Image 1: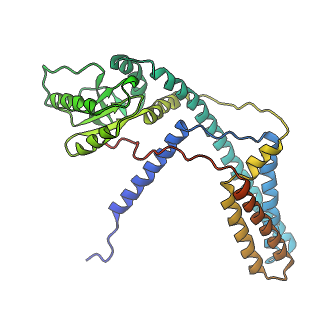
Image 2: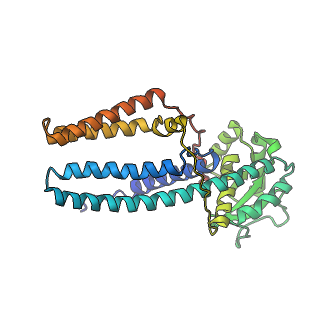
Image 3: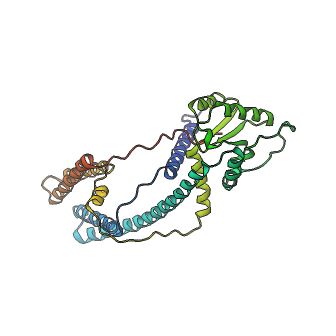
Length: 335
């Protein structure tokens, strides 16, 4: 008799939920304009090495309470050196990734305007399908052993394909028919019945009407139709471009300019950094009481805690709040 049953189903659902949130975050990187870094190379250099210097001072003062000065110095230098090497590697990787995303987003913006000019489903399908077919999950194929009316022809703008190893119909709808109404779903369902398909993707460079989404949800027990609006379509196109651009070496241009007061305000007094300042202030206050009120090192921690709390107040008062991103609930097709 098993006393403890391993919750495999719960862990799997949690993993799928994390995967969907990660995919939505990936989609946002392509669709929402990334925030520009207002700092120049000198400011970034000062931020990086200034943070390491502060980390070294804090670790050295903290370790001197447990070990002699020389041992504390060696341990603090080793800690800061390893942290600096790791942070430099992460920063370099992040910079390269952000550069790739910015370049791909500019390509996606060009596709956004180009897709608006196609007036027929045939033109849109002939333009988009070679791009989507370059993705590993898409493949144009005719699976064998399927019951299908051989006399029935596939309408123009509809492609028989395989998506994530599942036979699907992919129908393309031009942007001038946006928002796509329920008639497109009814036509697609009739084609699926004739061709013997249970899964389909409805792709458009526009949007879908709320009634269309409700109809697709009501048909989910019989026909699984994934709606691919403009946001997700640009995501798929950008993924295809990312595969093409993955082998290119992207180098950023380095320019030197003196940082302005407004740039310093945007960097140091960002609204989102207020929580980080509050957390740092709380931790430093805890270290102060842990070391003792009369301890000189504890007084230094108390002073740094006060500085962080003041910065947190400034961020809450003077920091600029960014607008919320668009609602991207359930954009990834689940078929």
